[in-house]
Length: 132
Image (cartoon, rainbow, N blue to C red):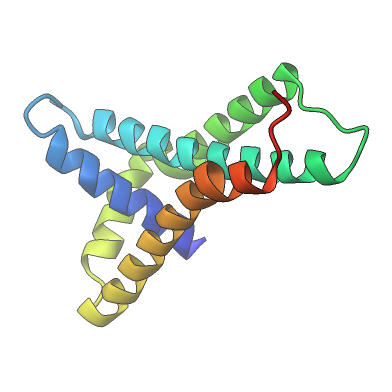
């Protein structure tokens, strides 16, 4: 859970820097970070589903499954990060950790981010043959 909150924290800090001039309240930045995290989770989930459906015949992806997944992730994200301004508690917690631990968490954040896009947009297209 600590890594998940740190992912959110990093996205929150990026959003805070980029939206400082437009966002009148931190809650907008909190929602922006949540949307970024959900995009990453959806990319991860779609990657797993594509790989799984390619290996197991008879499985298929359905738009209803995708909508259900997005709704569940959105609600979970709201309760974990947004409700009762938990994003401020997360920000304070990670602002106070020591520099060496923050460097390790930063490295894990970048590894996760790179792997997410690498798997989705490079490895999967190489592994799955195109039929057109």
